[in-house]
Length: 116
Image 1 (cartoon, rainbow, N blue to C red):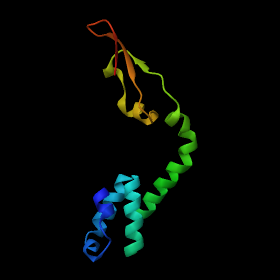
Image 2: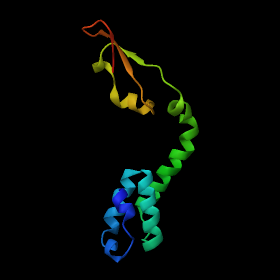
Image 3: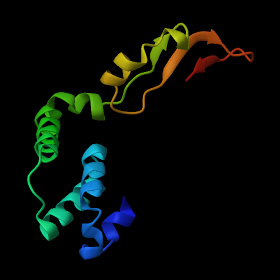
Image 4: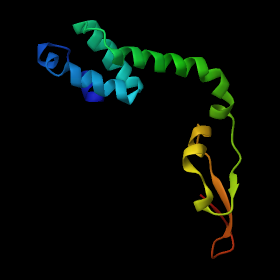
């Protein structure tokens, strides 16, 4: 993405505009925003549903940000579990925004508590 961002927006890039924009819309990262803005400034592509969906996604991220601030920036204590297999990954990932450790009741061979 960094390489694409540094490429000059000229006619050689125009042939690949649709593929680059489609990829950037899917990635949703800062560098993608830079690429999207630069390509839209230079080539003025037609308005598509991808643009609308992307803008709605960005608006949703920012409007929901205040409700997630504590989840993002507050230090989390380790989540205690009996076994790593007991973790429901999809529901846990929906609630975790920062590095979070899991602490198991199982003991390591040296007697220490296992942290994942």
